[in-house]
Image (cartoon, rainbow, N blue to C red):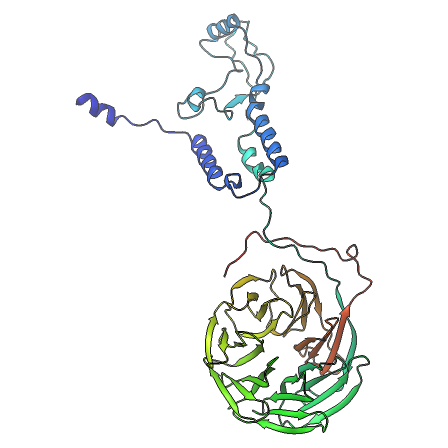
Length: 487
């Protein structure tokens, strides 16, 4: 028992700092190195490069060590110098450990070869041999710094974006006397209408940009417009709590839909049913029968202003975005909410449904997010942040997403990857303040080749692709993100 107690009470020999740091680095590499990921495909070229580097680092220290002197010279030097060993031998590491305790580690400290020791064969003077400076064997700290350069790369799972031509402004239309707040295109793609803060609705020719007609009837600014694809009806909504139906054959109001308790901010037409959806500051999305003027449902559930809405022929037939940062899917048969998306942190002012895919994007001041339909599963964020209040959003069939900010920024994105390939800044027209640079509405025409923006400087700007641009003049500068954020 005393012997056992003595054995247990013996202090363990402390390890050197270099040994501990090396063991920690080895453990970190074994844990976090992507080489251990069995799901990653192997790269033969990268594997060959790593293997050659390791072999070089493993034996380089041995190759560079000078040859040891003969046994007679070693004995003579040890006796003549009073037991001092030759300077070409390995030095012991601090902590009382011999180099053999490390298992033949290649990171042992060696003495650089210098001039022959003065007193190696001359025993007349007590002068000590002058050793060169201490150098570390290659592959100690430099190896771990350069490992990232030769580590096997995992191919990115992020989709590579398609190349798109940059867009340019080719026409500026003036005519409104106030902020231009809303826009809608005709189903024939020959004209479009705009609603303004000057309480008028103007109809413009798409090809020439000339004014065709001016309609008056609202007493506040007009925030929403929609043109029926089958009938000669146009619908408008504004801050005066009114929703109007215009007959474009008679150019006058034929129906009014009363029920909103505050300003109406958005409206949309169902693609297959004769139903109209309006949302406003009373936090309710109301469903109207177009012909009878009766209110079918009042979709209540939002806690703040309903500022964006779109519809589709299948469930969810109604999707609304609100200032309460949520997006709600609605069951049109029961008039109840099907699901609520809480991915955004700030108000959802704009949404855009993809014309071909079963997906949509929503824009907020925090980020632009993509969701799938019908379940509303989150796909990913856009790869850069516009850092502005986004008022409008539009998508065409080619996968070009346009977003308009409160600071006059117009950004173009690739739908597939979320890559921002162009950033444009609108120019405030003469006669307007510099602060009036906001863009309030965006819309593509039916072909997707023209983009119309409605702005706070009382103008309407038309954009199209730059046909002279090529992949050489405007290369695709894309860097995939390291990870895909799933929230």
